[in-house]
Length: 138
Image (cartoon, rainbow, N blue to C red):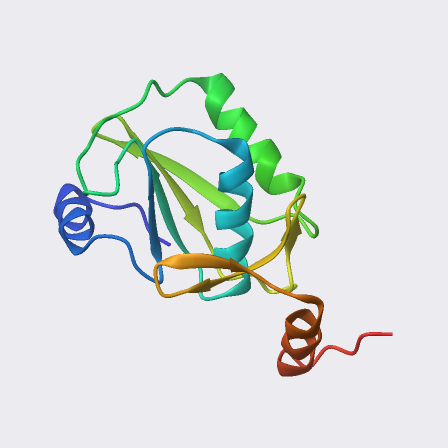
């Protein structure tokens, strides 16, 4: 994904949450892990930290510590997820590419993006996912 310009940023804010966009008012490592793997397991997407569910910019304090925590979170997924961070208007944007080594999981399990939600997969759904991705489970 290319870096975003201000027009695209405003457009996405107006559009609201959807298959490829998630808003988080604050950093929460547990819910962020789910969103990262859900996007990696689906078509990729962006997470805006510092925006509430009503699409309002609340902004957050963006520090190197926060950025490295988020990078560590993505690295600790299994397999690790490739993300790119950018900032705009005190919003931290996490760009998650669609993964090439699906399925990905975080400490809370396997998740898929469905509409504007990230859904946890049951064991049967994980098997079906493997079959659909052409991977064999032993």
